[in-house]
Image (cartoon, rainbow, N blue to C red; front, side, top):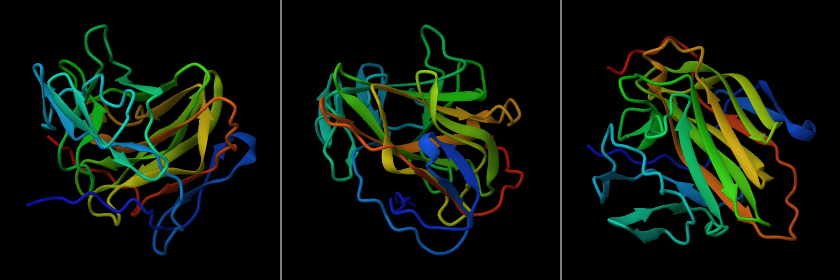
Length: 266
């Protein structure tokens, strides 16, 4: 049985609030209706490949996150050592001047503390989640986006989902530029497969932009041993060349269902 990647247009639901720099309102949307889709687009990391030794292969559950995936993206498919990486794109071109680092709080000098998984996280296909040698998750997931000198990286959003049918609540989601918090939300509901849609989308109406951005997913309220049950997918980002000043961003979080105790994956 195949699983189709969900529509990138957010679907809706009720209201809660989050913070964004400059007083921009971020809304937490809970059930029914439609949100007008953003015209924004950019490189989309779909995590559809991993490495088996030196070879690039389709994502395998439990496979490692290739540390060069997402760096300097110039097209929907890129030949790299050992094979080809693939990416999505939503209208604004690719990102040859941006590099990506995805790690967890259990990262070491030899292990990023994250892994890939194919199916089971809500309705998402191929996700990255916190994991490390001998662990079942980590309390923090980090995504660092770095632009080349003179450029800025523009973050449009990403999707989160919980493993299994039920939803759960995580401690928070934030986006930082150095020590400045550009966006933050606490008690974020992450949808499971029983919700419609089966994922939570964090989407910025105008992107969050800086020379370097750090996305911080706080899973510290989830019991150790279950922190690997939250996966991230469809990371959407662009770049701004020197001399162009992007507008400050606002955000929308979209999910379905109520937070309930979720079942264990393993």
